[in-house]
Length: 190
Image (cartoon, rainbow, N blue to C red; front, side):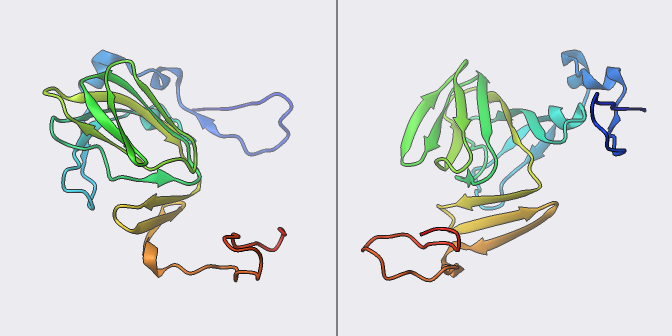
């Protein structure tokens, strides 16, 4: 395995690079790979199948997945990421996406982008064929995700994941006697 050498980079820490042939995943090779399947434990309608393409190609900071959701099923649980961006590009099939309080029909060629901290979302297959899409997003070392319909918050640091009931939270900073409706103020604000 060769090492990455970045011009002008003085650190002795160099990430090992995979061989060039491992950076390309051809369609004919992908069909021979074992398709992975998952269901979200909080959503009994969740059923998703696919390939973690980014991981297979050695990507560590970005996840790229080719996913399919069978008819009548959902991708995940209604959620939003507070630190990581996420996207989906529909390749085939039809469905709907719940984004915040709104629902939109989706089909081939539609792109969904979810900046960090944006509206909660989830995909549902309402068609008669699999809903197939390319999904991707950041893989930060630490992430917080909210699941508003389930009343839960997930905190991930590295590979450690902890789930908290949303109602169990309490404000970290006490409210100041400011104007009605003012937000909590941190140590470097106000």
